[in-house]
Length: 93
Image (cartoon, rainbow, N blue to C red; front, top):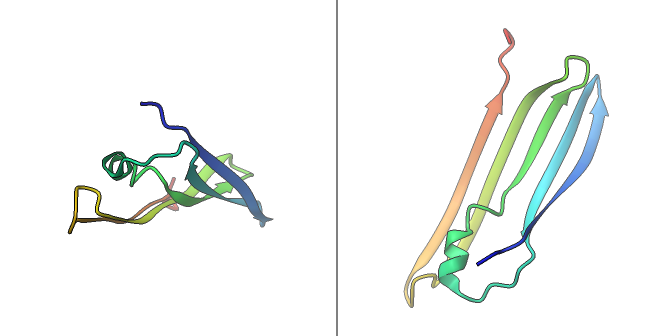
């Protein structure tokens, strides 16, 4: 089954030669089946990118997923995803 997602990017700041961009992912396709929602739990991320405009390189990227789904596999079940992934360019790069 095809499920459409939308990721919206927003330029937050441009300061000292660095651009900070944030994003948020939302689900466009309505889904009633909680088992399918469980498969999508980590797809709905938010995040921040910091880009060095002078060097043309990514300085950092942070991806966050914080979601809880009640009864994905029947009564008395709970699924939760709480992850943060951070990538930072080292000073020597």
